[in-house]
Image (cartoon, rainbow, N blue to C red):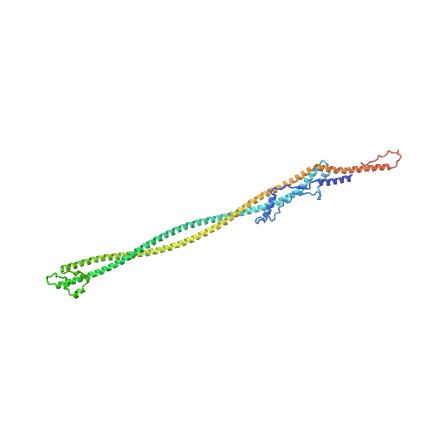
Length: 460
């Protein structure tokens, strides 16, 4: 009987384990697929691969199910073995669930710890990356401030240069106006010098003519006076006139030596009174000519002085214009140099602005990467914290599957044990039948009187 019952117990174990679920479906952890892809992406990132070099992040998407091998070997604790041994059809399902719960409690903590440890390593590595990103963001912000200060300084320099160029342009224009005015003045002075030069030439000729006229008049006056002396010497005493010109009284040789002007004056003169009047007129004419000569000579001297002054003024003005022209050329060259320097500074500002834009873009990208990394850390934290719940839910799902199999488990348990009892009953019946046959084969004996007969013992 014991053998049959032991054999039935073995059959119960086999039959029950064949009924139990062989697979547990684990819940999808939050962000698991997303984080798996993100981790792979970060491993290839130049700035993050070093932070994740030693991180063993579990593959959370590859094992959505847990395979259970009822025949995989191993032993149960004594208390669970005893629990199963003492089970009956009404308690077998609950005790099977108790065994499942114990196995989950024994095996899942280490698995949960491994998963959470791997996730935490990733979180720690990423937090290290966030710290470095914070340092990088601070350095980039400092660089951007320095670049901005440089650009502002360049902008101020460009504005100053532009203002200087405008001032130089205004000065150049004023110089051009001054040079034009000087040129007009020089041209006016030159025209005046030309006129004065012509006037001086004319006056010089006039003075020379007047000098010649005075010399002629003085020579004529001397000749008239000499002629009167000669005529007075030839006239008889008391005679002051002649019926003919006094010229007729002179010898031809003397008359031919008289200047033509004197000859013209003496033509028609035949009295000493008239000759004295002619001499007086000639003296008056000499005085008038002398006055005219003195006036013209004074005017010539004044004009000559003005001409010299005009020439000196023009020379000074020409020198001033040359100096102003040279200064204007120097200022134009200085302006061209300043324009070139401003162009260089504008190009340098554009280059620095472009470089700053790149740094700003790098800072924005780094800030976005930091935000993304913080988001990843947050999701990994949620995932890490969700691992125990996922395993707990997997346990509840497994227990629910066992609960759903309760009728089959109880039926199988009862049927298997019934097979054992049936074998026991059948074996007992056969043994009883064999006993009866053996008793029937015994020979009959006389009854003993000395004692009561022993009762036959039949195996139960």
